[in-house]
Length: 359
Image 1: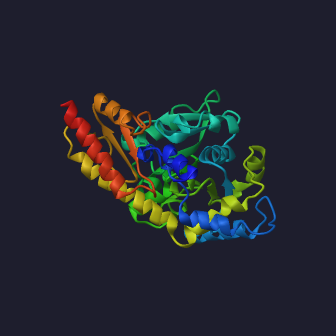
Image 2: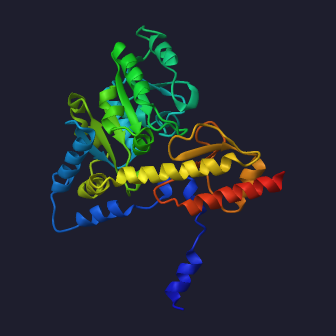
Image 3: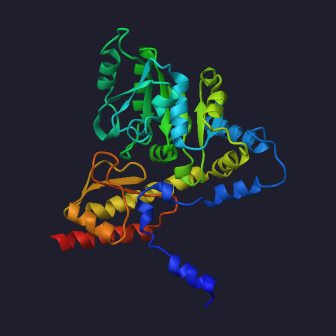
């Protein structure tokens, strides 16, 4: 046996990590092949290339509208810069109390908007209650209070639920009534599209969304999110925001080209459909285990469960890795394009084993 083979064997780790986050998955073949195809010869920089142009055209085709498209490195930048473009420093953004922009962006939306305040409201299943939203909007109108300017939706939500077209439309209509804009954090937007079985346009601009931050990394890409302005006037000087924030890639083709591979053959929806299916299978198996309860309706690619702390500790000690600080407690198991049915069964068997041992 060669030294290289021995080293490979010694470096192997258990594959239990994949349920912690869909960020843990690798690059899917379609994204990798598209990136490799762009790695040929000398190509103009900063997005002035045929790959970026083709990716933008493909996004406009998928969303059935002439939107303005920008590419950034990650979701934090996409959300924060998009919100900053819609607000001034004395404005506020209304979001759910569990929204990613509120709980997991380290204050980036406030930072990039020079102080715009996030006002969070509650609501069941990770989706805000429109009555609570309206109360937040109308609570005060004096000059001493930050003026509500943007309503931010997370699709899918941080607890794996999905906003329906009617819910998005109702939220947008409420926002418009008070002169507000609507931004959507779509880090797992593809999972929502396949869950609802709708055209992407039906849960974005046709439902009143002004700006979508479309996730790629969680769906099989290496890096990169797209920011889509359905109202092109709102994109004025957004390219300057990207540059100032360090989000203008010099070799832009390596961020934009994977979108071509993901969109043109439908891989973005295939990946999402597979991840959702694995989560549905996991929910099915976990539902029958004594002492385990499903916390939220499983509508996308995550399953949130309540389990005894001793069971959670035993799973972690056995090498399983999962988050328990996302959402409102419990354990989150996340499936990705790379998760297999065998992985799901193995996890369910481990939960069943440790649950039985603890009884």
